[in-house]
Each structure stands twice: as structure tokens, then as C-alpha cells.
Length: 134
Image 1 (spheres, rainbow, N blue to C red):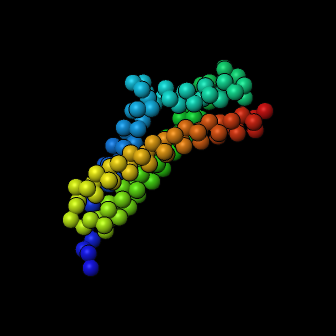
Image 2: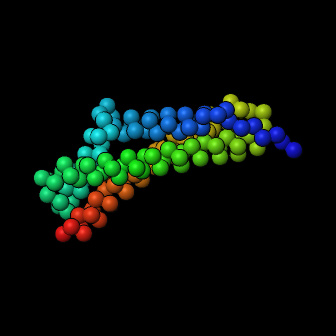
Image 3: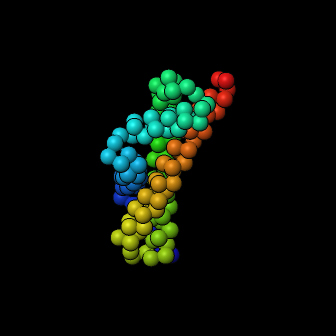
């Protein structure tokens, strides 16, 4: 029987946070995540679903939704880190460095996927809200 090697305490959360931070930093392209959220609000305005003068309220709503989704993403990415760590070590029990590298890579990939999905979800939610307000 292969002994179970757990990741050091707190490491999966740290890896998940770093992956999400890196993904958000790349998304921001030198700007701020608030700018990204404002851009999502402008996507809704550009469809004609809302008036440009509503950009402030749309941005506030977009921010609330986006922050909530990022919080959820943190837990999902952390789960991926733990899962990858254990799956890797099942195949190569003596390769903790490899397991760590695999976990970091999977965390980044999952972060990219979840952040993109969060942006799409924000726009969809704002458009749904706009159609209900109309």
C-alpha cells in the first residue's frame, strides 16, 4: 500500500491564491480589476440593453457579482490543487516536486477557465437584469 502524502498545511490555498492573482493580473494588463469590471459593464451598454448613463450602477452590480465568483473560484482552484497533488503521487509516489509542479500548472489552467467564465457570467447576469428592467 502506498502511503498518503498530504500537501503541507496551507499550501493548496497559497497555490490557488497565486494562480488566481496571476490570472487576474494578466487579465488587467497593467490596469486594475475594477477596470476589468467596468469593461464588463460597458459590454452590456454596447449591446444597447442599457443606457450609457447607467454605467455606474452596472459597474457596482458587476463588481458584486465578479467578487462573489472569484471567492467561489478560490475554493474550486484549491480543490483542483489537492486533487492533482494526490493523483500525481498515486502515479509517482516519490516525486513531491513533480506533484507540486503539476498542481501549480493545473491551478493556473483552472484559474484561467474560471476567470473567463466569471466575466461571461457577469455580462449574462447584467443582460438578464437589463431585460427584466425593460
